[in-house]
Image (cartoon, rainbow, N blue to C red; front, side, top):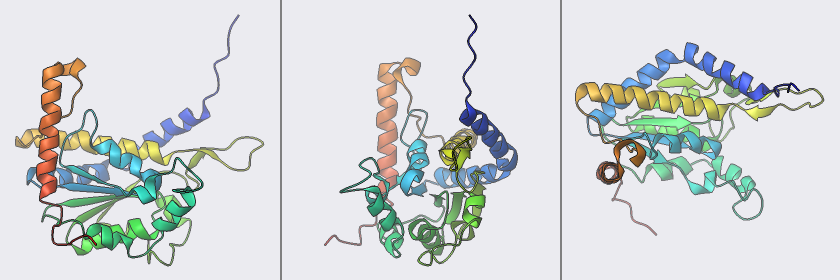
Length: 265
């Protein structure tokens, strides 16, 4: 008896989305990779920031297998801890905090940025206060800012008054997630709301494309940091050594970036 293959509409749409990303954003990804390689090769850092589900590409960049130091992930639990959904630490609070003007400046004040450092800000909508002000504040400190955002989604609504503008207008370089304004990719018969978000898959594709290209550039310059690698690839002792080397290198770079001038209170 033959079995009809199940329909997988999200995979079909996601494949088309990745193809669109590759054909339209390759130049922007290359430019971002050059900036990131310059920062890491000059002993600096590429800082990555996202709120909500935009924390996913931040964590994808470092630390995990196949990644290396030079990238500094910055997320705030108050805006990214979503699994309780309601009640204490719920989604309503996280969304409220994400719209709080002035918070980005408090976050930025914890760091001392180097002259070649880069800031990458992720926000699918690019319309809320914290990611917009994060980009604005980083530029004011002399960093080159890369915005990873959905241009269609951002232009489909007005920015919130507290944000004072769109993320894409506060960046030196924009990489478009290429997602529709609803983010979700699939429209189903009998359902008037689309399902299956696409921004995560393109955001992850963007950061891994940058990660690999930056590695190529750093190898060419003889400035490649250690890559975290599984023991099935290089053996247990070598894998442990690479982890230790990568963590020590990250700690060394970050020690120079943490601003010690401000005390707690």
